[in-house]
Length: 575
Image (cartoon, rainbow, N blue to C red):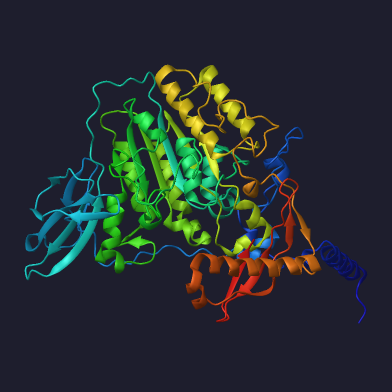
């Protein structure tokens, strides 16, 4: 049967298109064609040239990468919602005035129950103790940062457990030495790159940028491998491990945290992290002897980790509520309560939802959107500097095996939004500086200097001027176009400015280098473990998994190989 002329034309057009795609290397991308979910993604048509314009005068060239680049399609999985199984209705709650109530709408016969609360008492920084039980029937004022509540029925059988975090009002200082009441709200999310923010939290990203007009710093580059060095740079302006030691058996009470400078000026302070075993100042360390802030959520989360209720809860839940929502509700209550009308500095850092599995972060997009929408519509951002920050991109997910993952792991998401009531010449100048810094190379040291500027504005009405940090420059000032990673305090191995090139993995040099890397790892095991290293299985090279990478400024090669133990277990290694 002969084809009609129009059909032949269509067939020729399709054939030509397939040839073009094959010649352009499309067939080498995993996940050859996008699914419906990707095609319907809000940023599927993200225009790199329009959204991320290049400055030809800039020394550092940040790679332009589409958030839905085809090489990572196979790593993008459907988001599983966080479903918290309801073991029993919430029988108790604490209101905004720190009063503990029995919930008469929970379906219990309250006159048949005997309920009591126990104060969660902080015992140093890595343990908590429970106070004596206190019976209650009527609304009861609470003066503790967290309480454990339990109820028994008429047979004296336990039927209900819960732990409540409480924002306890703090007495105001004798005087407020600030001239202008500017609040600081830092909303942090662990292991979130800028590209991951676009992919996983599109509603929140759009609300921050389109409705709140926040400035996204596309050139924000991490200064260390994990959370500690990046948050130390942000909160102290100093370099971790050199200027700030991570010593064992010592606390961080003398750490010059920026919020302590705000506290000395009458600010009320809050510090909250939700994953106690991986907390910034407690992982392989002893944290703080004294609470580092007026409101410190760590004792609550330690009590949660020890509770029977957590062991019977769904993943990422505590009882009937997702864990990230508990911390966000605590933060919201702190912001909206503030009965003494004191300025505040709040730093909330969510870890668990994003630390282990990158894709799981997407389940919180609607919750984050609702949180910022509530603050905006309630007028709580009128006099507040808002920072949405992360420490680095994801370091463990499968996406790290791709070039895109290699790049975005160095580039955390950071957005800044000045108070809406800050108008006039000063407000215009600050917003213009933020727009100019949007595509420039920046680091957490710059965020620290920006926080110092905010404190200076609150106290004197003027910017701080000269910075204290060795590397930092305030985002409210000038970030030079000719700035390099060395200028910004970014070690060369984390610098995203370098133009990277791929090399042949089959070459003799590549193969010899892979063997040398495996031999070196085995040698380090012997050096570190001594005679005990005989108990360890030696690594064997299975071949290169990723291409060689060489950068323009960082001369050593980088490669990823696949090795295995004597047991046959495969492990990717990077060197």
